[in-house]
Length: 267
Image 1 (tube, rainbow, N blue to C red):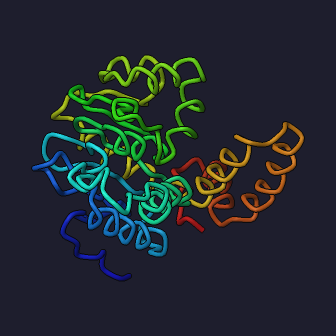
Image 2 (spheres, one colour; image 1 turned 180 degrees about the horizontal axis):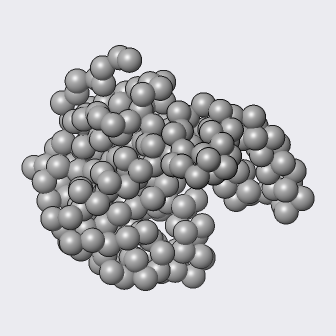
C-alpha cells in the first residue's frame, strides 16, 4: 500500500478503507484555482489505483464546501487574447468530474457549507450527498452569463427532472439544505456538528461492503441513463455474470447460509 499524496490545497486522510479529501482554501471558501484542480485530480488518481481505498469522502475546509471557480483567475476577461473557457474545462474540470463519476468505489460528498457553481457540480458528481443543515447549493452561472458546466447540464436534469433543473439554472438562486433534500439534490441533512461523524460512519460501512459489486452498480446506472430498456437489460445480464463470479458473492451466499455477517474483500 502506498501513502496518499501530500498536497497543499487538498488534504488527504486515510483509514479503515476510507480516503477523505478536504478542499483546503478556506479563506476563499475553497474556490478552485489551477493548483487545487490539479491536486484534486492527483488525489483522485491515487484513489483509483490504490486497492486499500474502498470509499472516498469529499468535503471542504472551513465554512464552505466549494465556491466554484476562483474569479480572480478571470480578472483578464475582455483582454486579448481572450480566455478559453473550453480549454479550462477540458484541461481542469472535466477530468475531475469524469474521475468522480466513474470511480469504481463509492464516493460521498460531505457538504459542509456553500456549494456554488462548479463546486455545486463537484458534489453532484459524487454518488451520495450528505449535507450539513448549514449547507446551500447554487448554480450561479447565469448571474455572469454562463451555463452550468462541470457536469451541471448532465447531473441536474437526471437528479431533479427538467423543470427543476431549468429553475435552478435560470434563476441562479440558492437552495438551502432542507429544500435540497425535498427536491432530491441531497440524500440526507444532518446537524452541522454531526456531518463528518455521520459521513464517516456511512463511508466505513460502504468500505466494508462488496465494493466490486458497488462498482458494477455504478457502471449499470451510468449506462442505463442513456440506454434503451433492452440495452439496459442486456447490460444488466452482462454485469450480473461478472458479479456472480466474485469472491464477495460467494462470501455473501456462504455467510447467509451460515447465519453470520459477511466479510467482503472487494474481489
